[in-house]
Amino acid sequence: MQLDYPYGFDAQGRTAQAAGDDHIRDLIEQVLFTAPGERVNRPTFGCGLAQLLFSPTSPELATATQFLVQGALQQWLGDLIKFTGVQVESVESTVTVTVQYVVLATQQRMSAEFTRGGG
Image 1 (cartoon, rainbow, N blue to C red):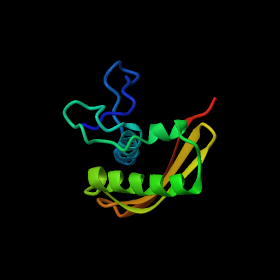
Image 2 (cartoon, rainbow, N blue to C red):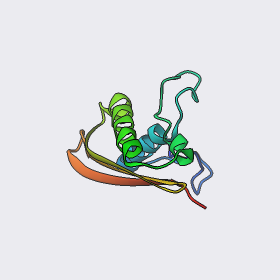
Image 3 (cartoon, rainbow, N blue to C red):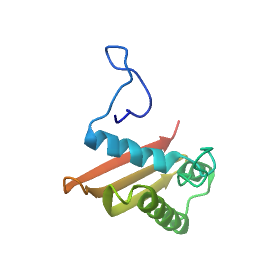
Image 4 (cartoon, one colour):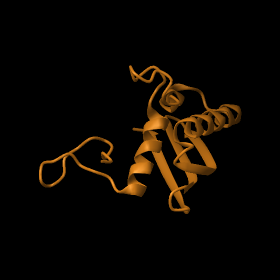
C-alpha cells in the first residue's frame, strides 16, 4: 500500500493511496522538506531544505544546496530512482527545486518541481 502524501482521505473515507509515479514524487518531497532529526526513528532522514528559506541567497549557497539535495536523494531513494539532474533556485523567501530522474522499475524519465515559501 502506497500512502498519498500529505496524508488524507479518498472519496470513500479511506486512507488515500498514490499511484506509482505519484508515490515516488511524494517520497522525493518528503526527503527534500524533512529536516534531519525531525523523525524519531530515522534521525538522519531528510535534507532540511526548508532552512534555506531563512538564509541569504548567493550562488555559492545554491551550489552547496544542490549537492546537499543530490546526496540526500541518492541516500534515501537511490534504490528506486536514478537522478539525472537537480536544480535549486532561491529567490527571497521562496525555494524552488526541480528534480529530473529515471524510475528504475519502468525506466521512465520524469521531472518534478517543488516550491516552498513565499507570501
